Length: 182
Image (tube, rainbow, N blue to C red; front, side):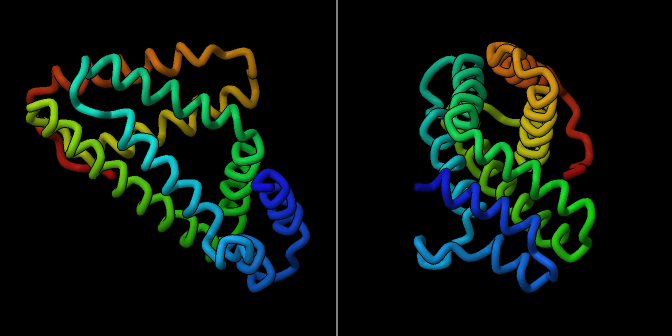
């Protein structure tokens, strides 16, 4: 049922003639008491991340599991991959929508940062890079990898997991805290 709703949303986005019609297509899901579909998807991803990053095991393995789990979820819901690309493309053409989409992404990064802060605390680690910067890095890596897989669908999910292991090791080796850029 969700796949059908997302497919219809994509169709309605491209047919929208004005901002009001687009906002109606993007933000209202009558089946979910008018909860924004994108916000619902982001919330589910944060909940998944919270579960995977327990802070009780090997940090590199948890980071890899979080990354590979994200890709498994994206692969299980290809309609969301398409919707996200459509939203990003529309944001590039419509300044008002870009601001709204950016606000949603900033909110997602804030929630991810809170998960990363809790994870570091559970691991007994003292981060040298602000959690909000780590969240931005993680999101940008995801966007880039998903775009690359659009062009080269054969890219292995293990590479994405390895990217996060390398990021984690790099973060652990940083001794100076740079100014936050996110």
